[in-house]
Image 1 (cartoon, rainbow, N blue to C red):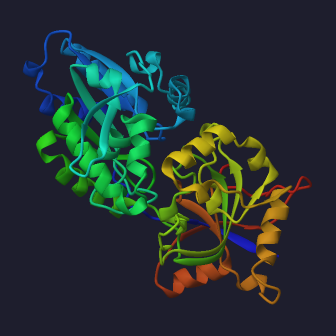
Image 2 (image 1 turned 90 degrees about the vertical axis):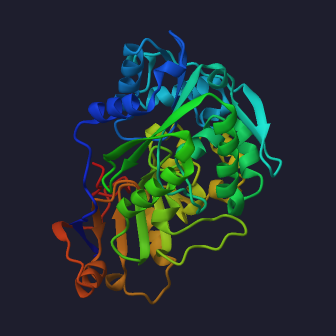
Image 3 (image 1 turned 180 degrees about the vertical axis):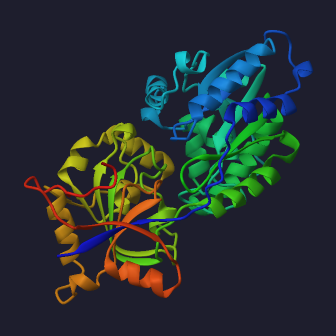
Length: 418
């Protein structure tokens, strides 16, 4: 019998206490209403990621703008997500709780774009037609490590401009040169957009290791990339992680777009699965089993190809159109390829264990079970992981000890998400 011990990890937990006040203060600081006519139309970007407190943040922006006599509206800025349709992108926002009623402003969705210029390298720059036609644009996004590349800016405000507002057409051009040029493409495209569109300023969100709002900061155009780069560094220092650098088996209870743009964050599991790009040195996970697809991913199983084993339950939830559209736009096709599929969680996990070799002692295996790759404050680990943590001096708070056991349907008895 394999025992799993609940442990509570410690990450940076500083968080913003008064979110509405912080948002209002940043708008007051960076919005020059003298540059806008009365009743000016202001577009606010809304993305497809599960950002903590995003409804409160957007609602406060809307309320503050209205108090200044401006007319705000939301624009879905998510590249090819939502099946690359206007209706699909509104549906994604609705599932995130972002509706006209919840934020107090209309949502104007379209896949139509304007060609607003070209970079010095010759990449065309596109922007959502409604946003570009507005009197002003406020770019809102979380700043964090990207799941496919490294650069001065990664996932954040610049990406929201280049890929989010660029819709599927802009996203395709950003991705066409591969992961190694993503960072430079995003920066150069966003630079052109900052010069040639009515962007007023950006509102950057940084979250702590527990998926909580830690910082909200306005960024003006003249200091855009420098400030965003600084916030990215802060974000990476707050990132959660697995308790050890290597493991024999990682069990992920749920994957999905609500946890990571790639379903399972490659920064956490140590797998890129991008042609021509070397895999990271750490963490090193021998086998990954993913059990289910979160309902809030709406069938998009982008990232399923990062796993080795999965279940019929997950497979039957996959919306191939949205998954394939996402993979084709990103050009990272391997990330959408299917792992070995088994009828039950028991079959998938036991086969993964067997695949490690015929002479391995199960009691010696380093096993980690996590709810998803976003929430890592509480995880389950085997005794060898505990031993490694203790030997390295990384003390952790221990909780319930349970067995890796299954019910009559073949489902894990102990799950963190339940």
